[in-house]
Length: 123
Image 1 (cartoon, rainbow, N blue to C red):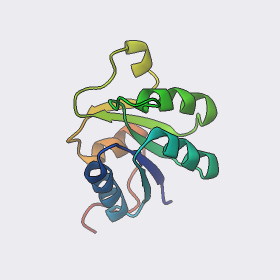
Image 2: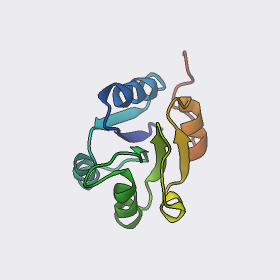
Image 3: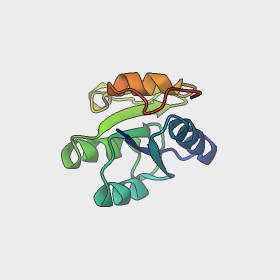
Image 4: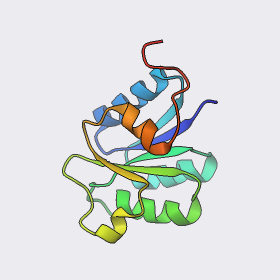
């Protein structure tokens, strides 16, 4: 099975790094730079896992997106990441299935989602 990931990060180099790591493992990944674009993608395609930068300070930030996803797309596993860490509101933190600081090894994302990469790393 090929898993589909949606990556939301306001830093293109971080988002593109996630996409590269996921594709090397045989899975599909789409990168967006803002939460509005993420909502547009979610409305037109199914994603198994969303990796969301929860620390963005914009009108629709990662936490707000996660709140909307919880209602609209409950089957998508939501992984929160942030450089500074993350949520100032413990109640909002509970909307993520898992939360990590940036610099995370991608295998931890797969573990948190309870899945195995389609292709083992380096194969």
